[in-house]
Amino acid sequence: MGRTKLISLTGFSIYPSRDTRKADIHVPPDFFTCDACLAELSNPHDRRYRHPFINCTQCGPRYTFIQRLPYDRANTSMAAFPLCDRCLAEYEDPLDRRFHAEPLACPDCGPSLRFYESGSDSAEMGCKSTGKTAKALATCIDHLRRGEVVAIKGIGGYHLFCDARNDAAISRLRACKPRPHKPLAVLFPLAGHDGLDVVRQELHVGPVETARLLSPERPIVLIEKRPRRALSPNIAPGLGEVGAMPPYSLLHHMLVGDYGAPLVATSANQSGEPVLTDFESVRESLAGVAHGILDHDRPIVRPADDPVFRRILGKTRAIRLGRGTAPVEMQLPFSLKQPILVPILAVGGQMKNTVALGFGDRAVVSPHIGDMGTPRSLSVFEQVTADLQALYGIKAEIIACDAHPGYTTTRWAWQWAEKSQSTIFTVYHHHAHAGALSSEHPHTEPRLVFTWDGVGYGPDGTLWGGEALLGKPGEWQRVGSIRPFHLPGGERAGREPWRSAAAVCWALGRDWPNCPERIGLLRTAWEKRINAPQTTAIGRLFDAAAALTGICLHASYEGQGPMELEDAAHGDIRSGTLPLPVNKDDRGCWRIDWARLVSFLLLVASKNYGLLVQEL
Image (cartoon, rainbow, N blue to C red; front, side):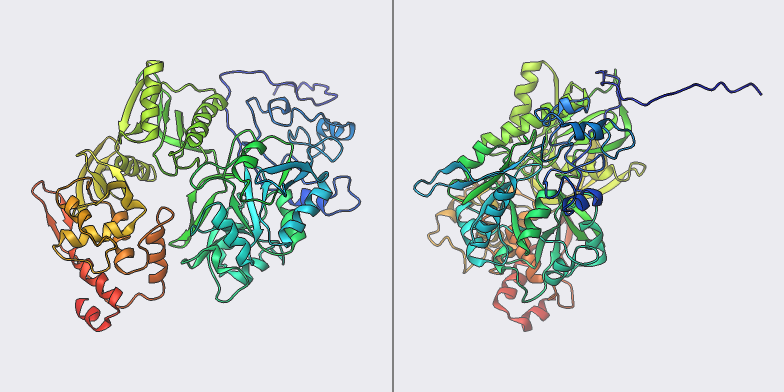
């Protein structure tokens, strides 16, 4: 055995990063506040006492404040805040928990809060500041206690806050935003041994919900309401669940802790758009909504809305990815390498858009962006696609888009391909769904995948949405579907469930007594197939059910009818089933015939339970 040579070392240093394209890059999501930093916040003898921007290597912003990689302070939105001597000493000490914590700051050298009052004589938000951090927060709390709505800058964007027990305040928020029915999330103060006692007073919190609420993501979790509690029923009208969220940033801890009661916390943006991230946009967009803005001077580099989870079959599953959960990095069961495959940018769909970047054996999925129907949504979409490529040092050479020719993302993809002379390929909506599910079982072939959702463009040019696909990615065969019907008014049916109800009735040659359209012009156009595309969408069938039962004829947000129908059925499901025939069409595709459902649902609406039992 040879001798071991000892090397004398006298110190430990971290040298400035050098840019290299060979680095194995992983962009961290934003982290919730750790217990050590929370302890400093509440300690009157600590120099960071009640400073809303405390952090360490274990917590604080990441994705939303990194401007570029490598991840050094100079490449973040904290570059404009030079460290004071005491913070610099912590930053340079290998034994300190703030050793190279890039968001590091204190009251002497870090960001601060400002509160801007709304102008008393003008609809525009005034620019008069009411003082720095302590006074600004106190003024904000005072406005909330008066039943007013306040916009507050967080980690990934601005939120609108008001008292979650105040019916009038929530009604004003809904009327001004406008957001007449879509459910609002609630930020709860911490109390009890695990911090969730106040949540338990209002909601049925089980072990699964507890684990998710206390997970590092600190997401919004949809939880069943308790009857007759303090929360306003206007938070989630027509629904039996509330989106509960614990505080995840120090500012939220201070805000809801000082207020001492639950607060509505909804994204400060036009419905469906990405969350707002800069003061001027908030002041312009929310002049008629918020009575003031609690702002801070640490820039938000890119938006990240709050993630949403819901318990389904005993597990909490993501409904929306966002702050703390994205970007999501996944390992692929294959490798995208030259010369066969190269980096791919997938640009997503029209609604609830996210984008994904595939390279090597990895895929990176962005946070939720929003609906792609406005110029601002397109602008944020372009920022996110550029950011993902820049952050990971990857330039996409292929772009994948939805086959629907009318999607904003599809048109953008073709323009991008034309300018860059790059390759583009289209993917059918439900083939993409099936491919995504296939990734969960990569070693099972062939696969039978049920892709049931709203509406997606199918290979036959019709609107799919209730499909059974057999095969594997790139080789899907439609083997099952539902009986097709035609939507009067086309896309308008998505926000007017009564149109789907009328369609299924007319398809069976029967009248619907409660149809809002009484003149008959719409039925004439439907019979002539004027703006009445064919669909097999389960989502539209659920819309029809919601309307036929009288639950929802007009929807102010996507999915309102099916969501309210689900809540109405909860706990009131009677014994028995309604069998539906399944037959092959002339192309060999098995079709579920929903005709019996129409009579059944009309009986539900009439509450004729005797005939209902016979129908079953």
